Each structure stands twice: as C-alpha cells, then as structure tokens.
Length: 244
Image 1: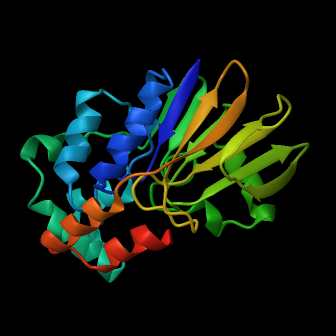
Image 2: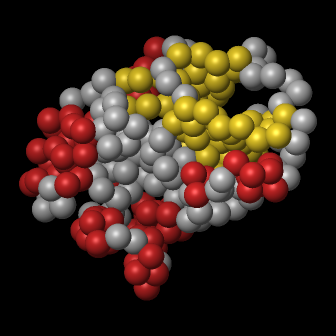
C-alpha cells in the first residue's frame, strides 16, 4: 500500500491543489497530513475545508495550535505571530473546531506520524538534536518509520546497530532497510525552505519499503498576490520564490 505524506501547507491552497492532483494522478488514495494547515498563507479556509472534505488523517501543527491558543503566541517570531493573528478572522467556527480536535500524533499503516518530534511534540524541531542525542528519540515509537514535519526541510535520520546517521533527501526514490529504524523529515507543501521553490510531498510504499520525494510545480504568483491583498507580511510571499 502506498501512502502520501503532506506537511506544512500553511494556507497555500494553490500548492495544495497541485499536490493533491499529483497524488490523485498517481492513483494513491491514502494520505496523511503532518499539520500546520494555517499560518503564513492567504487561503486558510480553503485548505482546512479541503483536508476536512477529503477526510485526511491529520496531526496538530504548531501554527494550528498557536491559532487556537493565542496566549502562547510569544513562542512565535513576529512574522509568524502576525500571520496567525491575520488568519484568525479568516476561519469559520467549524474550521477552528476541527483544528482543535487534532491529535498530537497518529499511528497509521504501521507508521508513526507527528508534526515535530516523537512521541508527541509539535514544538520541538528534529534538527535541534545532534546525532549523538537522537538515539533516545527512536525509542519513543515502536514503528519502523516515523514521519515528521515542522522544519520545512527534507531529511532522513537512521538508527542501525545503535548508530544514528543523518542525510539530506532530494527528489527521487530511496529504498529502506528492514534492519534499520527511520525518522523522515517530510518537507513542506506550502512554504519549502530547502532552496527549491516547488511544493514537496512524500510517498511511502509499505510493500516495497521505500520513500519517494516528489516535487510539484504550482502558480506561486497567485499565492503571492493573495498574500499582498490579504495584508499578510510580504516576507511570506518572497520566501515562496526563494524556497527558503
């Protein structure tokens, strides 16, 4: 069975539409979302409605949490905070209620899914850990593979014979080993920060035991124009073209 993993959409509906079209064209019906549906982007309602309508299993992201807990906005940088406050008036009560019930983590098709770091953090960045400090994180889940987001970067963390290694991921397929445990950093649909402006998502093939990084082009100009029209910070638009 193949599962598509999408993460960090950040209200970029134009990117989400193209990613979902790509997933549909591939005939993949199983999708998991790693959170951060809102923040930075200009179409939060459209994004939440789409994920709700397609009944996509989703975990809580830090921006989703920040929107619902605005007394905690001191945790966010000024641009992120301003974006969340702008988003607040753009979402329906139904959308906020749906976001509020999101779990911190899920187990789906024998994989572990969390926004930030296992077992249940949507605030901790996996990249904050040095290799020598990562081993205990692998003990926080029993599954062979855990998928995380939050960083907007692509990366692979492996634990084999008590040794942890890290590597970058790029477009294409990578076979996984049965004697190795993995944490996969899933990149971002709506605001990539890896130097490539395309939307990113992953495909996990359970039978083949592989992951594939997919790049998808979308019309950045539409999203950038809406960011300006909706009075979001202009940096949110500039980053889409730069890819970081």
